Amino acid sequence: AQKITQTQPGMFVQEKEAVTLDCTYDTSDPSYGLFWYKQPSSGEMIFLIYQGSYDQQNATEGRYSLNFQKARKSANLVISASQLGDSAMYFCAMREGPYSSASKIIFGSGTRLSIRP
Amino acid sequence: DADVTQTPRNRITKTGKRIMLECSQTKGHDRMYWYRQDPGLGLRLIYYSFDVKDINKGEISDGYSVSRQAQAKFSLSLESAIPNQTALYFCATSDQGAFDLANTGELFFGEGSRLTVL
Image 1 (cartoon, rainbow over the protein chains, first blue to last red):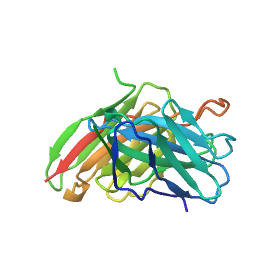
Image 2: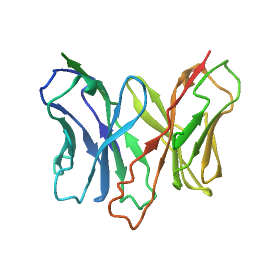
Image 3: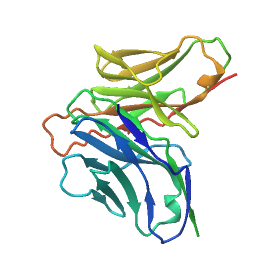
Image 4: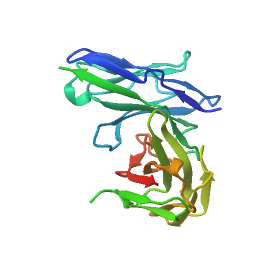
């Protein structure tokens, strides 16, 4: 069954340090997609990065990168050089099946990241 | 104007009342979703729809119903609200884009509807 697990309810990181947010997933479908979203205190959901199961390289978007380890079924988000504005809730999500398929997207429970000045 | 609009943004109601949360989108997407967010539980899928005639139950559909009035509109109803339905509700859309390799199928969210059931 499709499942997403985020085991870190909260994290504190010093400004300018790199941070890794953990995400593991479970699926029996060889085709799937993984997403990370950011939710600042204002409440909106912001899409950060996407990784397809067949993508050859780990996804990167500016200071965000996704450490995709397919055999371990993990898709950790790495934020380099953290900034105060990175303080937020972060959600990992998964779509089982290719994006053209009729498949739902489910979310993990989230990690609250707090950046210390 | 936002691409995905939810109304109302905030609502306080009493146990037993019927509540409708509305979602409309201008993105032209076929797929629409309703999620609820609770502290410590993340976002849980209530219902999702891939076109006007295709509606599916999500993880927590009990106590909820939906209506897809048009491609652009997807409403969530609580027929008889109860306090444990107090939550932040999000509507989201995504694009099927079958032949667009650049399409990740990511979700585009509305701003959320905060519902309190007393």
